[in-house]
Image 1 (cartoon, one colour):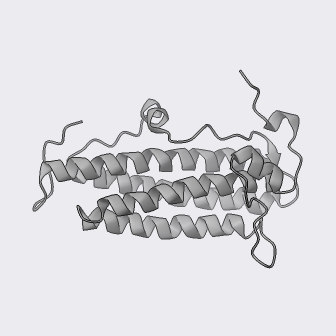
Image 2 (cartoon, one colour):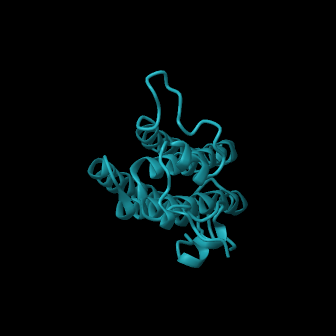
Length: 192
């Protein structure tokens, strides 16, 4: 999408470049917000209520980040693509791997989701750094919140020495299993 205008002091080429960076983050944040609500609805077992409520809080915070990124994109003269098809097209990861599953399994899988989203935000900070300090500042602020939310997840899947149950796990399913629970059959997606 071509940018028709840019903020004062910024050329349209720069605005378009930053807009593309932000669009990728927008898709990632929308995906994260949907995952958090999915977990909110489908988590079961010991610790259910605390995680159920935590997912609502984190989902609300993520939706605020979505709004900020979308509004910055349009301020730069772009179009914020937040429709389902646009998000799926820009998705940088596989579909969330768990359905109805125990608390620890979801927390293990969420560890991998937050690793992906947080890493993506840090990369976007580096990309925006010399082009647009306003967008860079927005991404820095959001990364701080994402990292705190990730810590809330990790605090529940680590021991007192700080070792994560998910250490060495690559996939969401590996991380879910490593978090110490056998997945229920309906929690594992079927192969097509």
